[in-house]
Length: 110
Image (cartoon, rainbow, N blue to C red):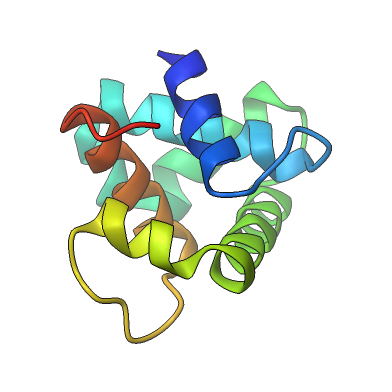
């Protein structure tokens, strides 16, 4: 499952030299295992990712936002294809995780 997520991030132009690459991947992995974790990302999802990577939930969110910025600046059309609709603004970190998770489950991974 993680290899699919890694492939999708690479297709969006994100490489493994960003800390957020692995944190986004793990967040998407957790969201696929427990979709309800997307309901309270700051209470459930970010703390779980932070625990895995021995950092803080705030650092996780910041790193994920950096990945969102990279994708939005470099491949917004690809992200829109994955989201299956036109994006009029940059997605939030939690929206980005949800878009990736839905793309993986619907079989539209790269």
